[in-house]
Length: 282
Image (cartoon, rainbow, N blue to C red; front, side):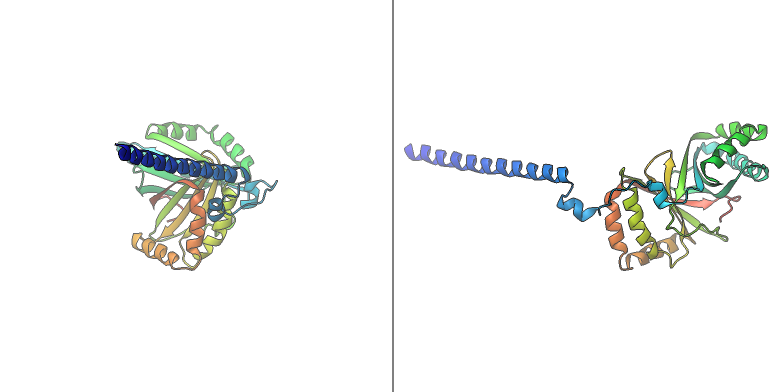
């Protein structure tokens, strides 16, 4: 009986000892994490995200030319209204071409073939910054034909979204394509405060993709959904896209750029686009 009690006491003592060590370890771990959060020098943070020195310069001014503002329209069309929508939007494009006093130019117009179906994406350019946007809206909204088309377009839609964006200065200049192509738009939602870090890494990363003809345009949002980045790529077909992306991974340094940008992303998506018949870039 005595031996049984003694054994039970020894087991309880060992369990208490182990439990005590676990609690100490847990408390130590928490203290270390709190310390890292306070001084912003955690070893994991150092490993994943490069530091950016504080600056008084506007991020947009450091990353882009603000004299040209881009507008990204995303329209979700009712499935039974696609034909009417296409005809309507082509009339809008033609009307904008012949309207004097505005610096409003369609760059590209696409339908989504992989991703959100029955969706159309239109990329417009304003020359003259936000003053050009104000003037363009003032002129168009006083145009009765434009207002009629705009109301008619609304009847074809389930929803729509508009963003004003600036182009990354390190991306190649936009060149309109001809022939038969597909486009990919890769959209990223970044963690607030990481846009400069993203730009630093992609200024290097884009060099791994310049040897091919696929970089079309790169933008970051200014008005609309903030901390949004959109990269447009152009390929002949899906097979060429696959080959091009695999080749990038064989390029020394590409994997490092990806490793440094992944921790900056909250959400990302990819869509495959086909140009509409009236798109300036094909």
